[in-house]
Image (cartoon, rainbow, N blue to C red; front, side, top):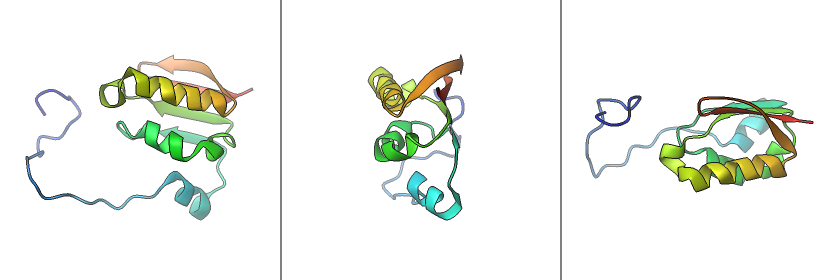
Length: 104
């Protein structure tokens, strides 16, 4: 990809949608949980997942997330942080775009 360094060179313009199997955070919790920690790197979908899973965020003792400003903008990153704070988590560390949030 000419701009996004981790984008694949197999990207091609097309009108045909590509559907990938996926599971929501809620489905993963139901099938494999309960979990006490969440490590999430989903290339720009973090805001959507956090919005849809606010109750689950309130259960985790630790959340480590990459917050992709290039994809969701500064406002999207701030919304993610707001949701994490509302869930009772506090920022305890950063490394680049990766943030660690922990329950007090």
